[in-house]
Image (cartoon, rainbow, N blue to C red; front, top):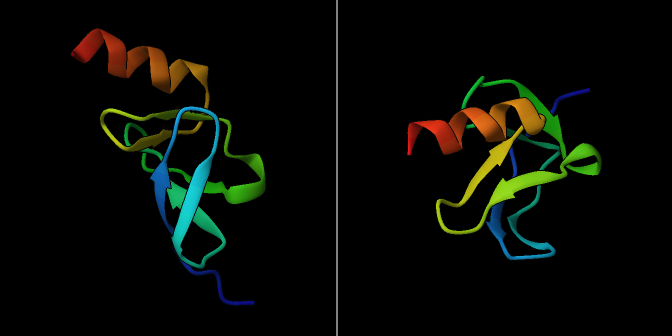
Length: 62
């Protein structure tokens, strides 16, 4: 099975799929996040995060 990276537009409570795919990459760790498991993102930066730990790291960097 070949996995394909998706392209998304992040909104406040949802996301739109621009290009179909199976996963996105975490902006901090680079880990793959399956779309069905995607729960954390930043609307302003348009970034996805693997877990709350990565999201917290991003907020400390800003």
